Image (cartoon, rainbow, N blue to C red; front, side, top):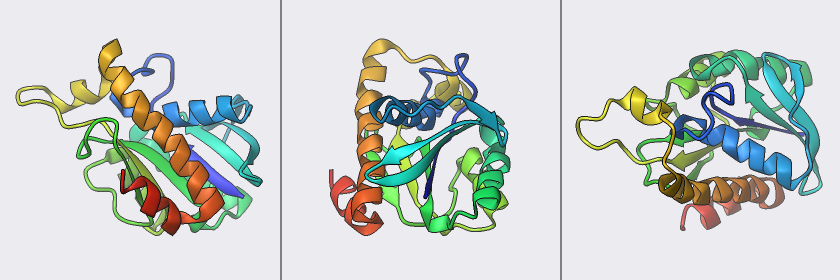
Length: 187
């Protein structure tokens, strides 16, 4: 069983923002695989289903971004999920908009949601899928940049990253993380 978690802030207020790229990937996965992410529990909205012949739990923590780890650890403990089967999807300002990078393990960098995840899991040994949103231009406040509603043209660029994020999840489950990294990280 895989736990697939998109980081974000509760919708609809924060939908169509850079900081909700993780939720957007979960929403697209849910649509593609007909998984209803409507159950409430573990401080999250979640749903179960099958992707690439594997049972999955799709999760959108409702704790707000900076406390995401509080929700995730509840799933890990309750379902006894190995950390190598926990896939965390989130936005990354240090990657070009619309680009996706997979990491097998690693730290949180400057991302506060990931800092919470690393803290609560007490580990950096879990897969990450980072959706690039690009860095703000000089003079733009970082918080405003990641939380502001996106113009349609910019969201179209980021939607390519969302689609690639879905592909990254599928490849990790089907072919393993090393093969997925070889395909996705080279694009």
